[in-house]
Length: 346
Image (cartoon, rainbow, N blue to C red; front, side, top):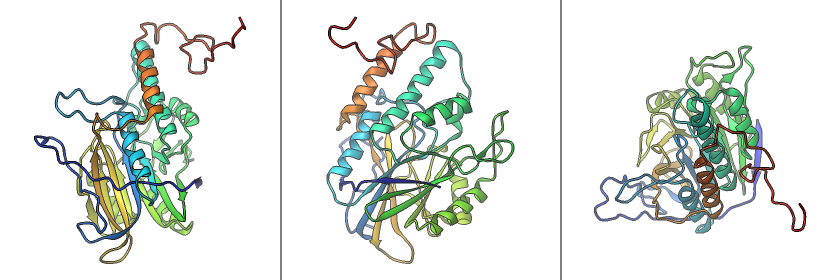
């Protein structure tokens, strides 16, 4: 079980704007303390992306476009800037690819370049952990491992194994921020199989990791699920985590769902919404007091400067007709590790 420690971060109480004529935008629950459902005393906010599918720019919608990696990172920056409660940031899977099989030549080079951007943007935006989704294996296990090496955050899966039953990625992590510990694990659907890997029973894997994380002292346990909404409900009943942040089914749950003690959150796809779980100290009943919602990512909103730069660099490389046709060497200015020569040096 990996342990990730980060310094305390400030985050914000962000109220959503209700825009006239914006009926196609799914509005989430405006932030308040106490919450409309009675919870009070904000303890932390957990935000997550899902089903990014390699998309990094806002949608091409003519009215009120949504999405964008830089814009999503900007929303998270706003949350961290404007309030004292800590924020935790996750991705629930299917981040890198739209299809589950690799193409060839230039198209495949473009897919992989976008996947690298997804990792680099998550690095600079301080993602805490990511669950592995089925589509993230779309360029094969070996390439996903290369992306994992590039990432500064852990990629997790509790049920992705080799054919001897050995886990291929860490099954879980504990993220510490201030005096809070959030345990996080991740599961894929069962029945996946290639020459390189297979997936075991996700329910059993999640149940075992939830128990292990609670034993390790986690104040809250989160499952990043790539099972889809219907199976997330089964997972909630069987494993009893505090929250399930889901991908695969691509639902938008503006008010979340609750199964027993577990709150289930879904945030749509392609980066147009940011999912959020608000964790309060007070509320009715036992256990953690939480509500789940979504935040629309407005294309015209605040952007993260470093992510803007990464996107611009990627767009330049994607426009190169030689991408995937001619190799790019370290001494080529287009290479990621290229550094210009010092002045006066040939």
